[in-house]
Length: 376
Image (cartoon, rainbow, N blue to C red; front, side, top):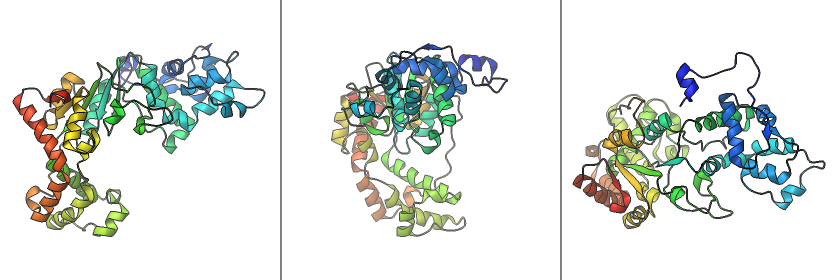
């Protein structure tokens, strides 16, 4: 998602020389938002050196530095571990390169910009998750949740990534996040605990009145077979990572060649390894249909029918700019399953099927492509 200037120029903005882009020196930040504002000015050219040059450190003390970087006050141990004489530049440098800064960045961005509407996507297995993120990222900054990976330990990778996201905040009135559990969006944090990958510890939940909370639903049996077929297509394409070593040890290696019958038999063996019990009810509720209906009744979640996702997204998120993926023909089909395999599949999707039946009945009774959770 390009900023306004880059959109007009139809390309990213880069310096013609080898110097790093910096910003005008400003008073030392009093809140994390001021730090993100400095990143926003630097954009893709953000650097550690540029951040250090952005602030006046003359009156900065350890408490100010910790609060600006991490959104919290330092502990007594952290204060006593600081060198004497105190060097605020070195302190800020160490904090922004630390694991805590990277791990909690998305949560601090949401808290730093409370005026921006939040798009909160509950990513369900085989529920158009990649499609939803692609659609959101076309119009809304999708906050990064992977900054604790090893590649972001290099500040030459981390700083431009943060600058690119922060730069988008100046041209959008929204922020987007995708996570695999609804509780991460609707349950307040508690001091000293971390809630999912968002690392949210605020007294209020991320989802507020006016935000968009949504998930994409598809029939549970179809979802389960889709998960197996995705693994089979990956294995046929040579992706050995699609079959973890423990699974290979239990069911053996995948077949060689392109014999469809052999691959279907392998898919039948793979079925109990891939299909987990009621993944939708576990992601949206307590694992049961009744508990999931109760959880959805308490929050303004929009449950979207997969075949009508594009129709819904054009209004709720924005026009599509990415081509719709064409799914390959399934290798394993429902009619290929033996009675015992169908019974196993039904047993592992029983609660999901009960929940989906309520959703489907409500959807069929109306004309809209989505159903509000409280109406179920």
